[in-house]
Length: 220
Image 1 (spheres, rainbow, N blue to C red):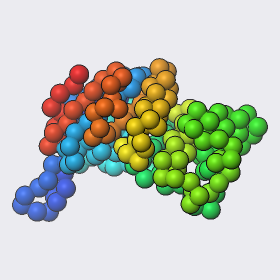
Image 2: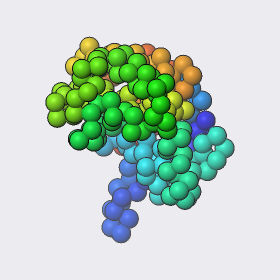
Image 3: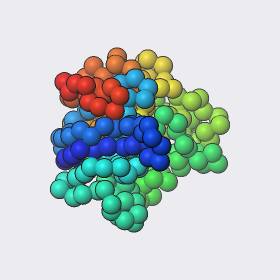
């Protein structure tokens, strides 16, 4: 699905000592499966995910998705791709504060019909968010509940790829493993990339990418 060649991300380009967030490597990712990307802070793991998902443009290199070059596509093409085929979960939930949890999920949906509402209810229920909580605004929910709502929002359109950057950082262990089980189940037919520093949540991944100083140190 993804074919990445010689990808580099360089900061401080105008300075004598440049900072390489990604240091020119190749990587191939499959059509489906749960992929863990792990490494210490500053290793380049989040930058890699942002470059793959078009949220950032690499300084050099190529990112092909199903044979299509993503580096250099127009803003309109990038937005269409994200809306139709990609789902995103970030460490911060970014929920709309004046909307209920349910409306925060539905706002990302292509349709807002009865089937979509039922689907959103099922997603939220599987994540431990009942009908009562689904009617509350983010300020009335815990941080962990808000994060689970954000995960339901990312999955409502059945994206072909889910990009999750530290999706369990605000969750306790029980809820973190529940979320990872849901992502694992989803990855049977889709590609799910999880960036984390917590190795314990990656016990069931299909591929583990370990990063260090802007390079891939190991793939297992």
